[in-house]
Amino acid sequence: MIYHWKREMDKNQQTYFPGNGQMNLTEQERELKRLQDELNEVRMERDILKKAISIFSKTDRKFSGS
Image (cartoon, rainbow, N blue to C red; front, side, top):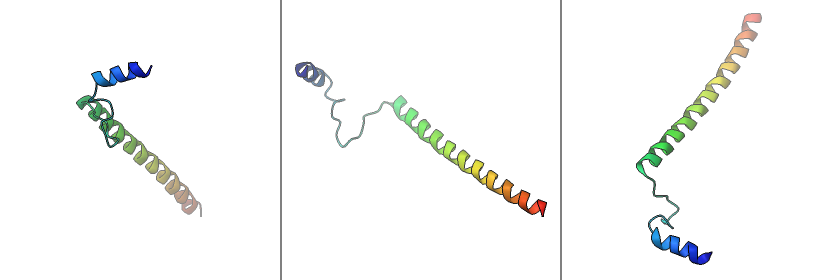
């Protein structure tokens, strides 16, 4: 098995052990990662806004009921 891995590594030296933990990504992979990061950020912002709306709507009910 080790010999098989070594042959594969010798064929694809650029993709094995690129160094410093950084991956060599294609243009499409970089774009996909950027879009995933953006989606995660937008979801987080949405969740924060939902919580804020919930808090403010509770506060409004307390003041309107008094």
